[in-house]
Length: 448
Image (tube, rainbow, N blue to C red):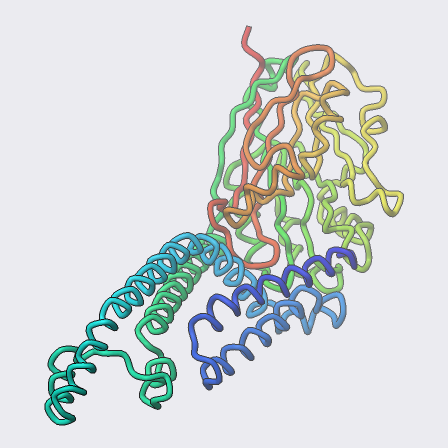
């Protein structure tokens, strides 16, 4: 995780927490009250806990991260949805404020209309005598405004007059709606993220695919994200589900881990139980380059499990007279350390009569793949957005959020790309609108 990324997170945390404090604490409590002080400190502590959860592993090691990860990352999700629901409530809040201001102006105008009547009553009282005048004034204008110097005239303001009380009621109602919406959404998201991945069965037709490979089953899993919030059971469930699909090939398309072999090696060992006639294959994702030991130690660990890394290289998968090329490239984040993707190397010397399936962690690499005539790219990285409406921002960086898409291929036709939502989660154990996924691609010859 880069320093620049950590700084960006810190800046976002400060801005969002300040917004939440203004809307959910300052606007919904009275100045100087104990409630406001307690809630203010709660916001400060939660912000610090969030930063510690994100940076704790880098600064203090996995043991500290395990302690703060659950509360810190859960608060990150709650904070996100408090912010989202808060923005949605800005419109009804603004409408309510406009209504209150109009009522306030109407009330002031009505008081102004009563003032001449009170003045007339006072003049009559001066002519008829003090006692009778006082009684007459009371009969004519019982709600006449108090004089500015009268202590009673300051009582409505000090106790929160009608307009102030209404504004406080609106703010508290809005805060309750925002809080309930955020907690319900996060609760649903936790249940989804920690539940079984959805199995997506996707038939894809490839040109030049021989009939002997018709129906070849390729299991695709990505973004497992073994880390402080996951246990060995997370990996065992994924392996059990993949084996239950009876795939011919298993592909792990990056972001397997969020830590070193020493920290997380035990969580990954169930991968040695993967079964597929043509083998299991792996390409690096960006998170493999964030670990302290770098990707190489995990590459060697996976080799010992029987999972074959494809490091800018390819293998041939064949049945009878039919075959295809399965290529894999390193993640784009490897460029900083001289370990980036090299598609030319991966495809060098290939037989153009065979279809090519490319494993590349980031969908962003599809344009380069299309320029080199790749038939199908399998990717992950996006998590499908993980927490809606974050999925609306993913297209700013990646050309595909999730699912199957097509891009014009050099020499005619299309390069197809399938982007899996991933089987795990990063950061908050929350998925909203993007359930975890294991994909089973079934390859067929192109019709006609």
